[in-house]
Length: 629
Image (cartoon, rainbow, N blue to C red; front, side, top):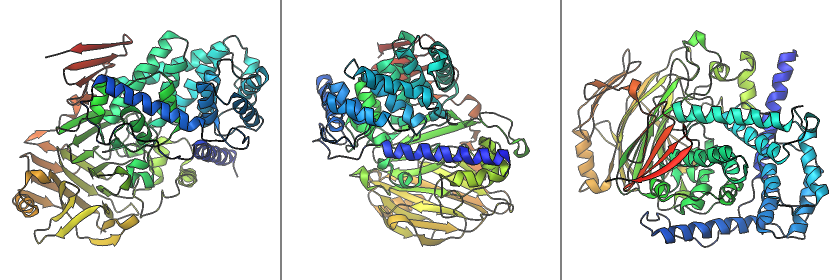
């Protein structure tokens, strides 16, 4: 084995170890406390009611963690349990003994070890014995945590490094795993965090809208907001925490994320309530079932209180709206042979959110590659459920792309090894039945609650099929003689028009797979609220009457007029045209909706709800509230 291959194998093994450590560190779910407020909580709570409900949820969460392990058991319990006891000032003998036991073991988990340990160190206000405190501090000398290679890794790594260095500002390089002094570590961490915040507030996140990984941005920002001693760093943490929460929860139904995503795992893809974002929604807004996460605990003890504007953005779905956002790809390091010229290719994202459903998308492939490696989720229709924990409330299409060009574009490992290394932690990656991942051969266009998805898969790609996912909670599915497939999803009516021959196959947990083994492929999808039609048959008749012309020979092309009157003209490989005008990607805003507004490059986000505009200005590090007409 060559040196390069051996290094790559060790590297992949360490990433897998970090992920396993993360899973082991997560506390076991405990019985939920009585809900403070019902699901579908009204944004019209009085301010005192809203704040009292939040305080109750926060206190309940802290108490659940603090009391999760019997104070007589020194063999169980993790850093979150210790941190909760320190925060409450209870069970201090157990906390010290358990922490001493953990510090006696060799650490693992890299940055996933760093931030829980950091929270314990920051919440220790002198309650721990000096020898235990010194033992934990020495771990930062003897254990070298891997910095990782993703955006969330670096956020956790540098926020943790900064805060521990700030606790010991005069420590020399001999006390640190990297041979740098505390001052040097603080300077490096602050420099990176400033850079990342500037990048995110000017051209968007790379690891955007990930329902699972959002916790690993929220946690480090909450730590900075709650524990940083430097006023600038603390303010940046507070503002960035609110920025990330507004970005994420503007595209949710009952606290559950909807629409396109940079990263999502197979099971939570089909049941979004399983993701970490639900735990934060329960804590912050009370509009989704209870879930326990250590990262939500960090938000709770940071002193952060969601503003009324943020609460309204996350909970008010009384009026349909379109959310447009500009994101970027992860840093691309190779790909000239595929025509890739931009380090961060632009991502044009939009989500139409109605009381009954949501339709969200990104544009698909960009510059010869995917928007994100491995776990991209490109578009979907999602309908509201009485209980979001049921899941299986989605329709989307998928081409299971798995060529090594994708991994080689985003990862530094050798081309011939990259798929093997990916599969060590993402075992589904090369399976043709998978549902996660993007394709460079898809193109998506959206006009409010209508979507056109086109595929033009070359003969060189090993997978010649496109699949459509139809969730198990879909009802009354009918294959119409017109070529449309009609169905009900909750209070949403859905029409799906396949553009190539297909057959039905069973899928996960009662779902259905529309399997279409054709390289020229696609679908037209139209959604509407059931309340807008006298009957299901009336909806069918309205859709059948819509103008639709599709050509799959040669370059795929679709011309379709939606129920809202938008004339969509989509040719694969060309900029879509809506009502005769090419979509203006050049002037696509960083954020644009009734809730969020920002221009690219501005570092300034306007959060709007009711008659209040709350502005986060990262150029001046100020937060202002203004009342408008």
